[in-house]
Each structure stands twice: as structure tokens, then as C-alpha cells.
Amino acid sequence: HESIAPPPPVTPYQMASSRYPYSVNAGFPEGDIWLYMKSQYPALFSLLIFFGALAAALGHWLQKRSSSPSHELQRALEAAEFIPYFQPVVRGDTKQWAGIEVLMRWKHPREGLVRPDLFIPFAEHSGLIVPMTRSLMQQTALLLAPHAPAFIDDFHIGINITASHCQDLELLEDCRQFLGMFPPGKVRLVLELTERELIEPTAITHSLFEEL
Image 1 (cartoon, rainbow, N blue to C red):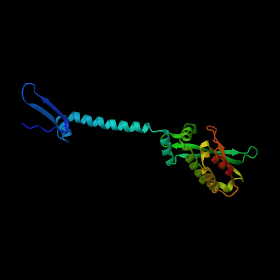
Image 2: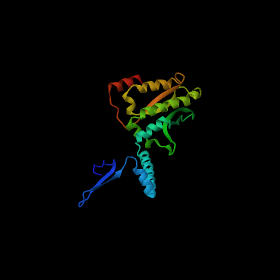
Image 3: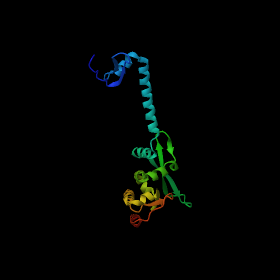
Image 4: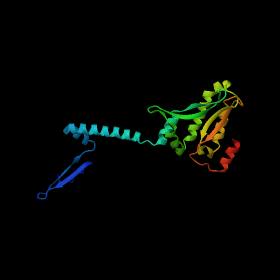
């Protein structure tokens, strides 16, 4: 051929002779390289497909393992895996229930029941502790409201909050909705502040505590 050969689109290669006036051009047309490998090297082609699938599966597994704690907590929150456990408060003289302390537990689908000290610090750091506590209060109210007639008056219900809860006024509405599930004066909601973080004395914080 006297004309210049068009360069092939896949793996082009050219070699010119140093002694004679000709050159050799090699390469593959677009889309033909896999057909060529399959026909000429079937074993190698199958091996490449196998290792490619293996690498994809390994990458997917590593990606799932490397999920951030906040991502896993968000997933668990959406799946309603954070549930309330009730610890009774009992009078020493009459042995009558005076109230309960509400404790958060994580009912993980694979790990079982997860202790709070293993996930609460992550929840506080990520800011998810606020919606998690809101869900806990809603579940608690739904579980206890049907039994409210059996409670003594001023029945103590203790729920933990953190400094993150004190940064806006949403906690106030959460408390109002909680108490609205019970007859007036039947329960006394007690918010117990954890000690891991300090509260910033902002105007919102002062307003929240005045309203509470």
C-alpha cells in the first residue's frame, strides 16, 4: 500500500524496516480485542473474567466494612433498631414502682444487643444522638401510655440528654409531645444530662431551660 494506513484505535503499534522501504502497522479495530482474546486465548480470557469478578466482590466487601460509624448509625436509626429498655425505680418501703429510667439499646440484626458505651459516643460526636433520643421518647410514650392508669401519680420517667440537645428548642417540643401522650399530672418527665460534653451558655440554651 502506498498510502498511509490509518492508525487502529486499540493498541496501535508501528515498526519500520531499517533495510527496506516498508513498515508494518498493527492493532485492533474498535470492539474486536475481546473477540480476538476469546478466540485465541480462551483460558486466559476466562481467567481475566474470574479475577475481575473476584476483585469486584472484594471491593464491595471492603467498602461495606469501611462504612463510617455515623453511616451505620444512620442506617440503624432509619431501621428503628434503637429501642428503649426500662429500669424500674422502686420505693424502699413499699416496694412499689415509683418510676423508670429509660435506657437506649441497639438491637443490631447481626451483632445482637449492643451496649450503649459502644455507640453513644459516636452518636454524640456525629449529632445523631438528638434524632435517636427523639425516637426513643416516641417509642417509650407509645409503650407506656396504655399502662398509665396503673401508675402512681407523678410517676418518674427519666431520659438521658446530652449537650447537643441544648443547642435548639426542638427538645421542648419533644417533651410536650411526650407528656401529651399521658393524662395530665400522671407522669413526671425527668431529663438527666450526661457529663461527656459541656453546655454552651447561649441565649438559646437559657431560653430552653427557662421553658423546660
